[in-house]
Length: 422
Image 1 (cartoon, one colour):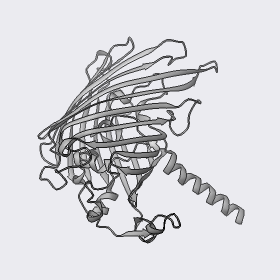
Image 2: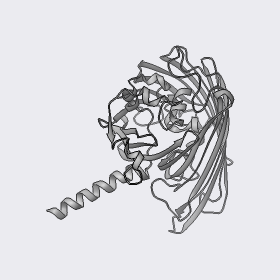
Image 3: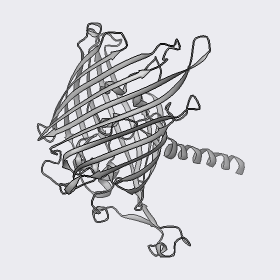
Image 4: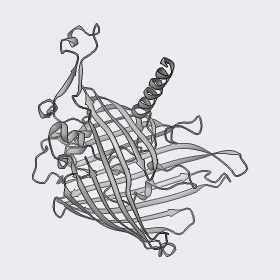
């Protein structure tokens, strides 16, 4: 009996360690009500509309999920459980450095429900109730650590993700666990549309690697304010498996990116803090570039292994002008051997998008996408959408995914959805 108990405990500990430290093919949590409870504040403090972050939300993230400018301790409203007395700091290393954690488990959940309507599918109308359920834990541990752990059920498949992060300062963080190697403002978990961003959704071969799948690895990142705490520089670099939690070969994938913000709130926080009548307004332009290089190993129909090297070079821009946010991405992707026949595949993908905050609860969205994969005709799509906050943590949306190219004229898709976080 004792042996079976020990075996169960070992299995449970291994699973939890996997969730926190190694990640899986589940996207990083999109919105974390645990922090709303911790600070007793609205989701709108950090979000334009969840999951899209405003400038303060990005500064909060850049400070290791803490209030910027040294305000965190005074802003925390939820009782914390001390892990050791403050006096232990004076006798370190003869004592464990003290910290604190949430008094109650910082658990949150995010439910995504959709109705899909597509004329060339059977059934034409499909209820996805739910499309996805995310349960996650996120918090800080003392002054220098933060973490997130997530379990997700996505279209009937179980996934999990997580990371532990050391937060030396806004300018230097080290993360171990689940990594999303995409431009900071264009990660999958931050979009307002049901449609994925085209540049991160392209596979060199059916079932092959795509950038939005994320991976397990190590990352360093940081944010440095510009002059007078306006705008500034953000950077990130990392090494990942490239094939999710496990890898298909001995090689590791590498990525790095840098962006610079002109105007607006400092990237690590600044004079324009939370509490503004229009917390989404951040008149600024952010430009950046990200590169990714990796290798995946596949098998031919004859059972012969072959390698496919993939590289990305991605340029991106985000501009806020009053209530309007203009977004753009251009991506050049190269697969050197996606089909195992030695033939390269070049893919060019770009999009432009406009998000307009008509009211704090009503955001119309319009995106145009163009994807050119090898010698095939370009896939062109226009995505009109509207996002409606019924409450700060309940969002309804409707969108069309309308194909403009000849090959996709009968493949239009329409989505109506309801998301809530709690």
